Image 1: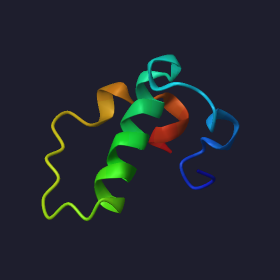
Image 2: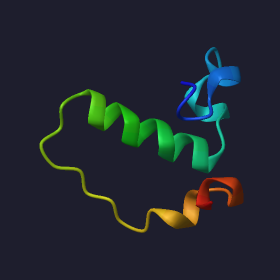
Image 3: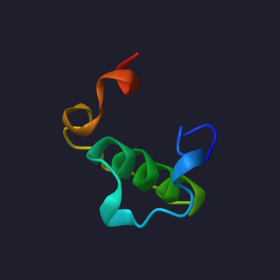
Image 4: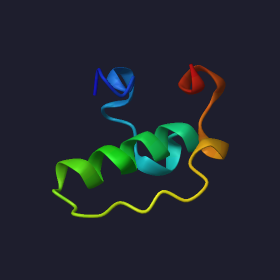
Length: 53
């Protein structure tokens, strides 16, 4: 959660997260789940400005 910048959102429901937060969480869950393939289509539009640094 720290790496994703979501420490303060640990108890927040998914639908209450911003688009960028949802995107980061979804990617992390796919990687943690051992997905062999991750399809990332138009990744950056949902990321907030601090995520693009």
